[in-house]
Image 1: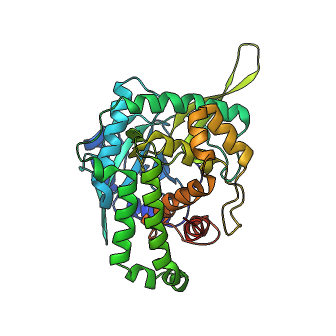
Image 2: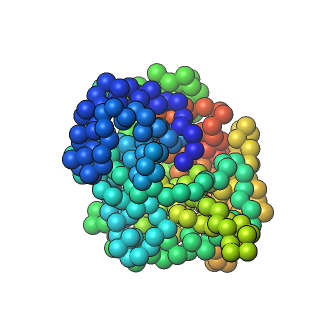
Length: 350
């Protein structure tokens, strides 16, 4: 896990300072994990870009993820997917110790959060905004195919529309439009307000085009957010002393959704190939995009190659929604990639 971002770090640190008894007692009751009050603060370290993970680094046994109660139903879905994958002997994903039971809740002013516990896996993640090497890409694609095959064998949720990728995009945009006071409080309020109507119109056009291009493609469960920091690698020393890099796991199923697998593969290739976060629009390492997609399969590469500009806009829309959904946690700025996503949507031409 990479170093923590700042937005919520002090909040969780304060939680353990002000109510360590609650945390320790509930951790034991819910998961059988023993954190004594005396050393709770020493054992717990905040990790993750959105500061949503707690890392038991002393025992090196658990990752504790703070879940957002506003998406509790989605969290239960992602936990059920992970458990089903392990039941299917797909071990290149996080292993849940306990799902989102709803027993352990951290209350805050605007609601609360529950926790999920995963078994700790040793390793390191890759660097954002830098394309993986061809060797790393080969390892990622090989395991990505295995995971997607396992996901394709899982049954779809009964309420499939609720977890459909396009439905999640529409729901997020609609909710923000109906409660647009959040924009008035935002540092970028003037710019967001000026372009919001156009953004919504372009969103509608992109969604219609996606349905046309993907008509007849089979839906399945997809990961939804594979990028360099959601892939775990490790180094292993062979008997002859040489050190080999090996793939360990895909991480963070928070954006799991239902869509044709081709969408997830193309979006993953684009996420892994972003190269310049200061550019007002996305700059991609196109050689890396093409290599990734061709390694995955010529058919998915051809879908992308037939209309690259559309896929860049569709990708920008999906990524915009990820940022906007977390606007109270992440900073929407020109420096972290949000406006690149936003501008890809604004510049879409039918």
